[in-house]
Amino acid sequence: MIKTHRRMHVIMAFSLLAAFTPRPAVADPCLLAYPDMNAVFQFNPSNYLMIFPGDSLYDPDYDRFGVMLWDIRSDRIAYELYQAPGLLGFEPALAGANSFNLPANKFTLYIDGFYHAPRQLNDVYVRFLPTPFDAEPAIYVDGERITGLYYYIPQLVVSTRQENGFYSDTIALDIAWSGAESMKITVFSDKDGNRVFDGEALYNVFMMDQTVPAESATWGQIKAQFE
Image 1 (cartoon, helix red, strand yellow):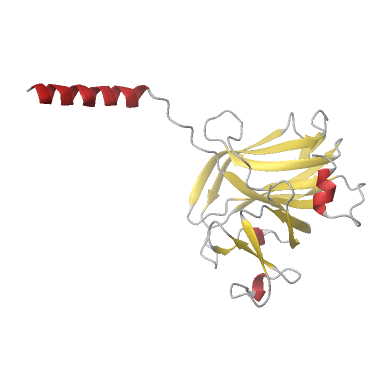
Image 2 (cartoon, rainbow, N blue to C red):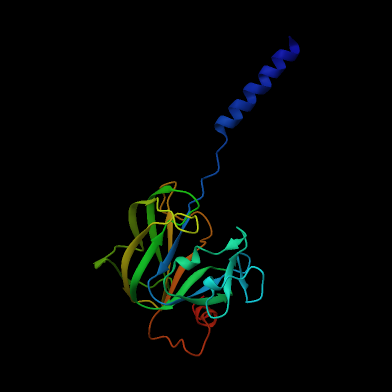
């Protein structure tokens, strides 16, 4: 009986501890976002690897100027990046971020729910981060100026299966901005309702003002001017 009582006390204590211990917040999914224009993808070398002709992993169908990109985490071709219609090529990132880079103040942004299975994402936010940080840019989405640095999308349903076996559905937004040297966009699904992305952004769209000369420098050098 003593052993039974002790066991019951242990079980009750564990149950109470589990009930009152705060549970970790569910991470917000960072959605794939890319422009309709030509763009260079700057990648984190810990996430992606460049594959050259002659390598056993090389597939010419995914070649961009003599190189293709491999997703290290999933051990496969980086199908997600090839969703971007204007993907020009690849460049290792200086700061470890994954971003589609382009010199543009006006373009169409595609928000892609690319995933290995059908899913529904609610409370999707498009977050704009200007440089310098104290800039007060004018940002327009589908012709209407937004208030603040967030744009809200109630829902994204992903149900269309692609030939590569993944699922993808997109939302297209016409973006125009001014009043900043550069602009970074991250799209995420807000899990806890605080309008804050709780994690490291996996994908970004990074835009330079069109007046910044880009011909004689790499994207990494250009971005370094504003970091």
